[in-house]
Image 1 (cartoon, rainbow, N blue to C red):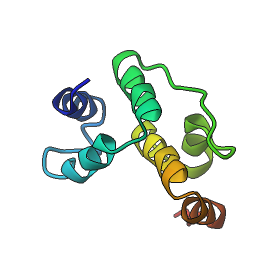
Image 2: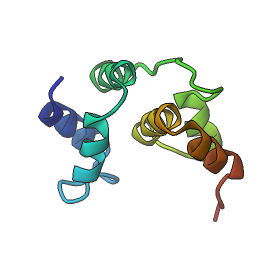
Image 3: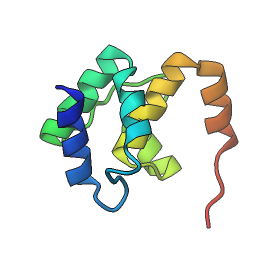
Image 4: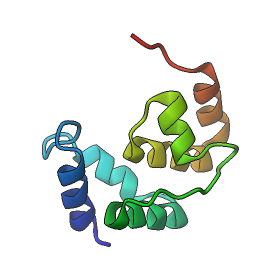
Length: 99
């Protein structure tokens, strides 16, 4: 799937989160995403099916549930874990504040 198709699908699925103005940094990350994970993301964008792939104990569904991420953020977080495991895992273990 080319990046313009990915962009269109994300803008349709998440109109309240991603806009034409703020999506470019996101697309740059997707372009450099781990190829297998990108394939899973493209599958999700086409079908709505979420991968059960686990990276260092984390899955898309787990990140969504436990860290309040949407699917796109969760996929990008898994990619971050693949690319920078120590930094990403430290950040995830530290958690986040909820308001």
